[in-house]
Length: 445
Image 1 (cartoon, rainbow, N blue to C red):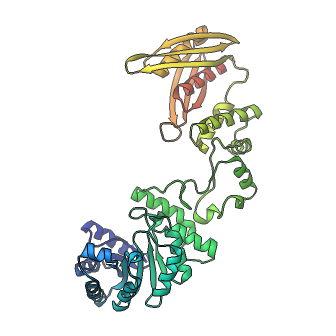
Image 2 (image 1 turned 45 degrees about the vertical axis):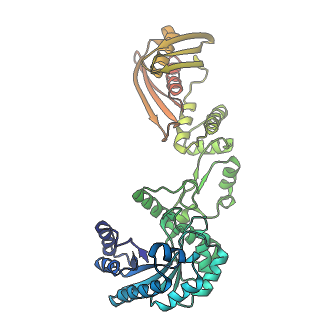
Image 3 (image 1 turned 180 degrees about the vertical axis):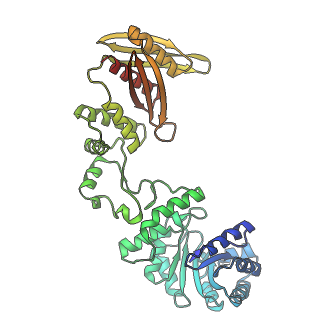
């Protein structure tokens, strides 16, 4: 069953519900309704199969929202339910804020008002698994019973699973756990807990869970947290060197389920916890040949980024590895030191200290910006070696954010020789100089 929205909300909402109905998804389509006959009329307009009739049942809601009493709730809920059923709609009767209500009154409502299903709503997420046992025992003989759990205290999945184990017929869930405030019970969590921990199969095709998650995330513009179970970016992502080594031997060492079961792929990222074995394995998978010294340099750069709080992706690692393995061995020019001063009321100035054929050279330069100033200082320090032409200068941010890894690619020419070199750093100035110096070393090699 899919609750496709609240038909009473707006004409646009009704158009959306109609579109879901017309999609002919092979399941029951429902709409949320209040204790109002006009809400049922809106539902009929949408041609849904059922209504989710939500009725306040806690004294707090009855008195503060409705300004009525319990007898009024039972009477009006009965009238609206009968009206819907008389018009051919199935009725799921839900007790709103039931977890703060008198359970005896909730049972009285469900027994008095004729409906096809009943639902106990933990509207503010205060149920516990122990309390779920009491609720299910008290209500499950009245009619097919569902539970609707919110996640305000982080127990929505546990409570929903407990309800099924205790004998409830169903639970309300949402993709990615979206919903008001802290959200509702998560579809993917409930389904996978039931499957993996209790051996209870559902009709959900779990291999499509991640695709569904990303689709809903894109359409709602609500992105799951990175560490959200099953669908979060980090759910099947490994960084620690010890973990990666074990994962490669047997994925069960640090994964409770195979990522393919939910439509995911295992991913390795790199940071300050990364071990040399992980780097060696990843660089090899990228098809890059690196010797021992180069692997050490790649690992050092990865750890430097990790110390800055950045996690290095596969794309980042490839750029770093290509930059390191492309560095000329026994270089003619080595950058020893760089200092840059820039601001909105100062001329950008840079000084560089180079080793050229093992001789130290110190020079400074100014420019239109800090990168230009550094380039001019480099040219001055190079002297006669600066007789080359910069054919192309290109910058790419490999990932998002102001601390993204930056790849700078330059094309240099001298006479009939043309070479391309790259640099990769989080600092665009350092990446630019790295690319330029590598290019110069190749020209003069």
